[in-house]
Length: 132
Image 1 (cartoon, one colour):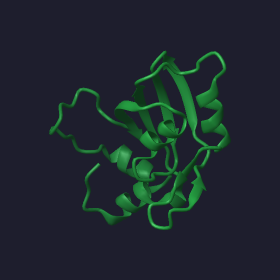
Image 2 (image 1 turned 90 degrees about the vertical axis):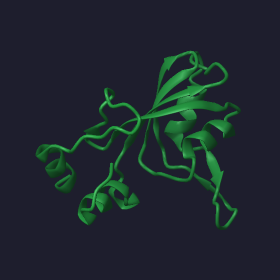
Image 3 (image 1 turned 180 degrees about the vertical axis):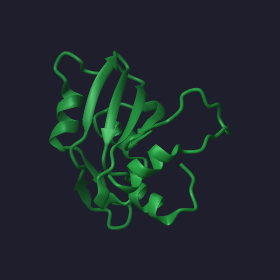
């Protein structure tokens, strides 16, 4: 989402707003759908990643993970660390081979848009962001 409106951008990117972003993730190895290992680790917030500045291990905030198929999952994150999804799955022994952001908070990203294409937000979407 591109905007020159500082209030909209602040509401979308500020960690204090806990705005969930939804992703469709494809991984290299089969997910443990039977034991729900990944789902539990994401939900518990038990995955720790190194901070890029301090090099200290910091636990990720709890996140939701829904299994879609043997090598695909839908994930909802409320924080946005550097390459967070790739690093979280790597910490669980798997490699992300594809990520597609499906929504940012209440805004569903238009799956019909080709790379490089864009659309304007509706007035309702803008109001939802500003008053959430």
